Length: 167
Image (cartoon, rainbow, N blue to C red; front, side, top):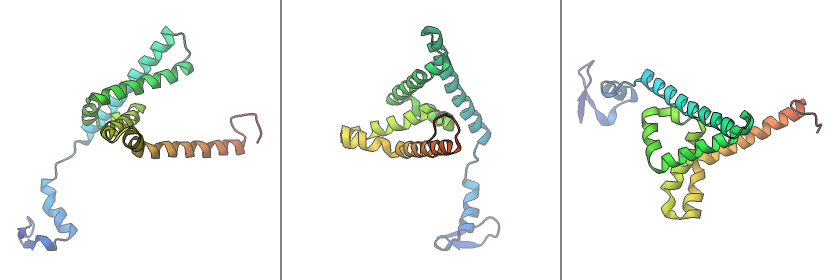
């Protein structure tokens, strides 16, 4: 099937197009990316998630008389719970479509990825479906985190940083 290029007006056969010819032909049909708008949305949504987390932490500190260090773990647990509930009702995915990377970066994005995989494979059963598939995406993150923590711990132990106990 012959096609004309804008520049030369020469007919080309589509089965013999080079990658450069294809790029030249397809360039007018590629929509422009609103990079600034996407960055602003990601910044605002990620920031709002962090403000929500800070508010939850402040509530734990005020209501239960916790220090900021003591309130950190329950704050993360509440954020994960909120993320899982919103994912279960399909709300988190709609937020992520609008916000882009802003919802993927905080801990809520990690909880969303695990919950989405569990929901997607629940028909296959609890063990093989949910248990077997929810760690496919998150498993690499967990392994990387564990290995990185081990390597950093070894470096700290060898260098003598962060503690008074010798090897």
